[in-house]
Image 1 (cartoon, rainbow, N blue to C red):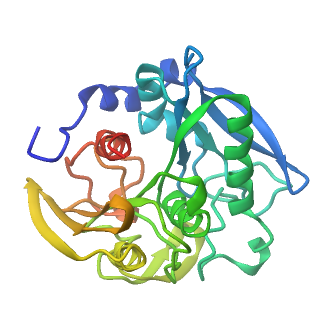
Image 2 (image 1 turned 60 degrees about the vertical axis):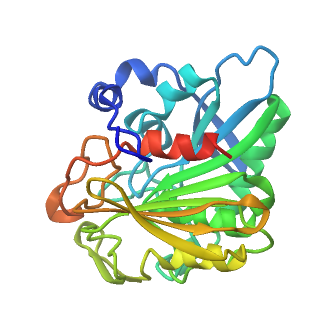
Length: 305
């Protein structure tokens, strides 16, 4: 372990490669929203009657909730640490056909310019708020956190900007809406992590091309997200450190209400969840390099709130 950064969790790597035992921990359920059954996977350990934390996990484009829970390690961590983990499914463009990574991928309506007009009707902010509210009626919930990867990260940022009243902290990995939403009220604490060689979330911003989906769109530079958060929280200054090999951390100081804003650049990493096996080819996502364990990094941030 290097100072300030959790080491790569070998167990999480194994669980990512051999997902079927962990998948058994998650229960599949549905919630009606906008006259549609919206699916979600949930791990709910016995809390012994005590309030439990809730972590909402949002998958990337083309993915699913249950896959995000298992491959990122959230299902196993929830079962051992005793918090509730829920991972809902986004809708595909054509809701009359089964979702497919190549031909009909699930992705979130993050409110950005890349969301096609045909999907503007999907109220994912309302759906996630209803899901959180429903789970609160079923269990005693303490803190509520949200995290996401890629499209899921963009959705998490939109949700945190629009519904800060429902979250204690948010963590985004390799994704944000463009334009970046301006937080309303007092936003929750934010962690943003992204690779410096991410072709789908370029470190300096710019045009993105996803050939498999014939998609082209512009992305703002990732650092503009924590900058917007820091402005909304009236933070007073920053520190710029190298807490570990291949890691740059910019942290904002003296933010309103004791909130934290942290921005991690993971040197040399492409569009991959840090610390877990690569799921996308380098030709599409950029290089995969050993990095921090995203699961441990985010849970440590959440648990300190």
